[in-house]
Length: 456
Image (cartoon, rainbow, N blue to C red; front, side, top):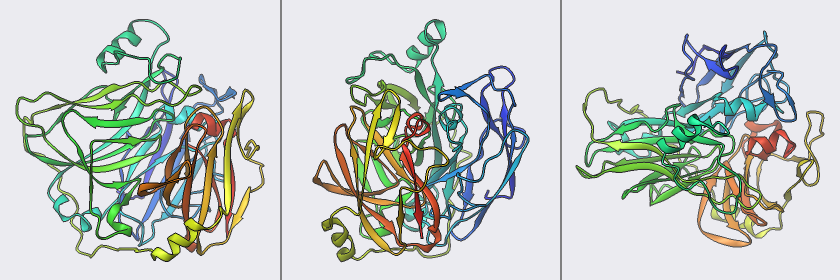
């Protein structure tokens, strides 16, 4: 489903929380599109003019818009424009997003990106999955497998009381203390809004799991008891897209930063083997938020093998974009063309000492047509996930040490008091315009850890 369709932003009359409504249901739709097709969305803001919620540093005004996270599309209206496209309550935005023919097929997502309100709206669940079809061209064995799309979202815990105890017990959050954080957990993760659902899979059955971490600031270090993930793509980028010789990698656990995605083949455990799909403790640093282990779902034997969804079978051949090794090595060996330094204090969050607001001038201008070495430095006592709109980048070093396994991502963790080195792919002219890069802890983004970049 790539549209045209109507998506509404509405206010729950009981809780006062914001949510999406599609076709009469409060369930965000999965957008499915083929490379070369357009996504057409009429986005109507029916949120209350008087919000009961508190956004970062101010009451919410309930303005809203959409960001198409990870897609290599234009940052100009009516596409992935989060700077000039904004709807106040009662207003409507009309998007036509032109997905290029060479878009890597995989899992992406959309979420609201209204500055100063993105954290609250995302926390309320205003997000959904985007599938760019065609990944089975690279991994033909996916055809005929059941596909499961899992959007990880938050449920807020009461500060005290029965609801907090019940939810923590349900997800087996037995040791809320985690890492260096001294704070108490504030939320638990759900799968598509359900707390600890059951996932049916027959012993030895292979399923295709597509998972997006849509939390505004919880990390998901994913693991299956006694199992592994046969990962075929991260952040929507199939491994084979740039390297035809690499179809998959088998990993025992996979850390997804907020906004990160994983697509993997999962094999059903043996009969009578109790297994859970869970997230491990992740240490966010002494100034970070608690990120304890919890159970996301129980894996149970399939009760009915009917109703499987067959993967789309494309008749075309896969598109491979092999990048000359010399171009990558040249960027890696060069001095950084740009360095972004993340800092914070009690007054806010900064990139290169500057706090973002909508009137901020661009921090830099990038000429299209090159690969560039960027360095992102973290001078704080908590982990920050770096994200840039419109492009993917190659992560090849951390804390100055080359990585044994490089990855093409659109969101990467920058370690405490550390750094990452990236090769930015600025070769596609479709990205021309004014775009953004920021910390994808949306609370930090709303408080200033964001900057504009002009692609020309």
